[in-house]
Image (cartoon, rainbow, N blue to C red; front, side):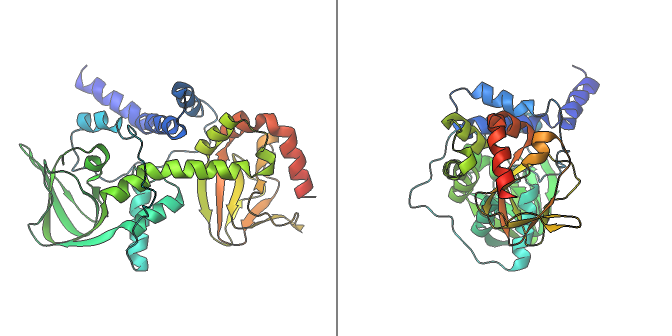
Length: 350
């Protein structure tokens, strides 16, 4: 394959975000511990075949382990989800005090990181709490190629030289750049050397917290979601397999008090279940049109059942945590409950 053809293939993969979505599909199968992983993977990928509702986020992500060669990084990516991580029963993520500016910096950095941006908000909060500040002097080796990996870093001040034996410097890393995750994920030696250029400050996350939160906590969340779904009245008739699939498809989202979650007249592509908090439903010229909705209540189904525009505006009246389901997943998993959902919604909002 010529250089032009190779670049065209790379551009095609990047354009359609194939690498990330294939990785996400495999993650989904492992998260569900499915006996039929190929069906889970195909179901996940089918949502992109048509009616794609939104553009993918830009992948302007941080450098991974010293920007190691693409071929090596791609081979390893398939191993990210290779083994289950069993958290010790008595393990709790550590919490190191930080000022508000540091919290905001870490949240923003993790939101952009390929591994962390798909975590639920509560998981990212645990990650932020577990980071500990580390300071380095000029010439200090933060990580050394060939050493075992013990920490994941995000630079907050200063610069680092990242080099690979035989190639010399491959890049200069500055504020917001993350590195060190690959060695932790795969229990592999460090792939590059990172040296402080002047006084440098970084936030470091230990390997146990990294694995337990990033890889292992999803298993705990899965059990938690299943327990939550089983106590939502309208979902009690779902089969155990459907409950597990739904738990693996839910996306956790946080909204501050006063935020509009959906707006009257907009296209509807998501179904929501309230996990924590409270919302109100209003219509233009009518004010509130139902009781306040709380834990276990749901909304957003009307536009998905009928393909109409959103019939009301839903606003968080307190800090609210929601579990959302995309249109295709809603139709596939909850289609058999269409009549029950419609009837329940009508009574709740009468």
